[in-house]
Image (cartoon, rainbow, N blue to C red; front, side, top):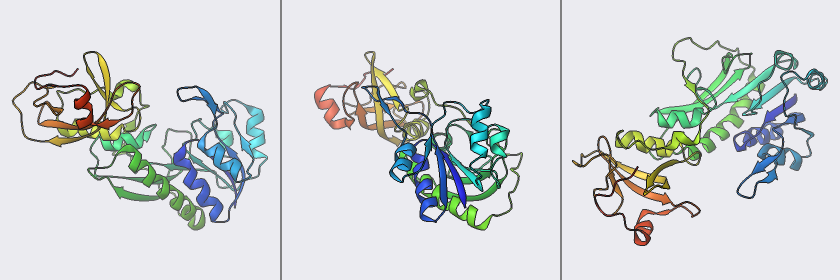
Length: 303
């Protein structure tokens, strides 16, 4: 088929590669414009931009598309059979949704209607879901409300982080979109029951509330790794927590208090043994290395 591909982050790259490997003609790739990133704020192209250029595909980077009639016309002039959308980052207007012969198909990283919205991978882990998955959705003008063509589930393990689940779902998404285009299954409307929304993540979402259970805090740490990252404070210094082990046994200490000298912290219920921790401007390190350089004695209170 003649396809337009629309995506921006790493999550979308396996789908682009899968479509090319399946023999589809990618007539254009739409992605977010290059933007400053990293500590040096150097202007960087998106992962999809890099992948498309390496493959010799025409790349388009409009900053906005919703009300740009010229862009709508240029999009329609590509005469595509379908547009495949994966974490593109811009809302498509009806003129663009309707332009390809088969419309626009979205690769969404959840089992819809659960976790519509911006952060489905992180939200599924933080909420304690037993599984996640990918939905191939026929896009409409709503927020992830379109009918679903295909779904594939994957279990969420007790060791999964947003990073590991992201990589697994990205590979599933590539495989599933190829199937959807080949099989063209009937799109099934989403049920009205079970709708949840995954909000846009902010840095403050990573702040640990030690009054919560050790299991909840563990899921917060895993679900927000690598970004925005779960954090606490020690003497007003922000410490990012990269990994921890929940221990259900009660400690008898106030929540947020170290119960030993090895960074085991009392929670609202149970305790959390910190495994990986990071100081500002430093790399993530093992907790044992951290306490050798900075003692955190029993009774210390974390914020």
